[in-house]
Image (cartoon, rainbow, N blue to C red):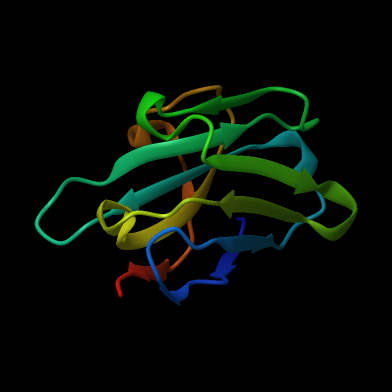
Length: 122
């Protein structure tokens, strides 16, 4: 069992930045792929980014490349999502999740956090 807690969401103006954190329990955290997903009202939960256990391999949704950066600190059992140049369409609940396989499909992720709300509005 892995417990995940997201934090760092909030209200930000268009063009602003936020850094989300995903803190995990468990001594085997470094063996997991960690993914970020988001879900806007009335829409499917979509893939945002993922990072492998070592932190050296990352993947991004094509539409987000260049604006979002994922990283991890295994000593702190934490994964981060740095979001810049935020747009209103980035408004969503952001979730982190862990998987044993390298994937962008939410069905492959076994444990999920409760999510953190990001609202981009002036």
